[in-house]
Image (cartoon, rainbow, N blue to C red):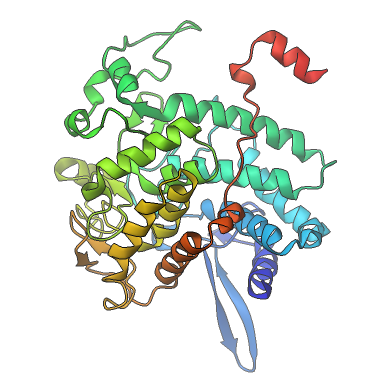
Length: 407
């Protein structure tokens, strides 16, 4: 507990530091992507990177969202509510929320981000409204609603956004066979309030692989959604976090796990788990990644296998009553990770090759494995990272229900 407490305090201190690229200053609420101890003469201090040192200078949108989840997990594990209620922590929470909830030229409750603004930190067509960010945004809002002082003015704002975001993701990002059939027969160029195809998705954009790949009892949240755009790729982290945090309904959660189980070889294979499926190939790879030599098909973020996802797979399996899938994945990983020196990622369609440029002895690889084992051995630990479905979705209510709720 003390290590996590110190981590939270130190990163909070870094949040308020000035960060800029050239002459432009970034927002105060930004949390660092990483930090390191710098030795200068006889002094030591923490040097933080807010993206100004990153490849392509991408700011970390996700770091503040993860920080809120870690703070909430710490409070639940230790009962140290007093830390979260300190003035500096309340201010830090609000600064993160200010960045996320700022009004923009936008009609959607989802967060608009540039490409590569989270774990997938290179060009991969994940700009706009990527699922991974929306799932973390939802998680952060849930955490903030518990961590803020009950009488704080931010609480009703957070809860309102939670309801809007939940409705939007569950209704518009969800894809199963019935929904696919509906999209296939969509009319296009609709306008006005009666429009059914609200995002003007063209049926010709449905990829050929999807027709055979999507099982009758399976479903998932698509990777991205915006005007004229639906990214049909399966992104593991966004879907698993949706289950863990109850962004997905119970029925949707079961469908996602059914999909993983039935497409096990594609999504898990020889090393849990594919960060996204399928890989971008050919002309798509050239245009979308910019011919990125690190993101060649079935490598790194482009269909590579990342062992750190084990903890999320284990948590999602635990929550949906499919613990045997977590044990199976852990068994597969345990056969290779130790002898391979805990690499960052694996390459190949089935994940059999250590990543071409994968670093070894990676903290998050080891942590993902250990956390997955802990979740299997101690199911109660799931409560540290999971949430109950408490969002009030006003968009799905009729007028009478809204009036009754406000009385």
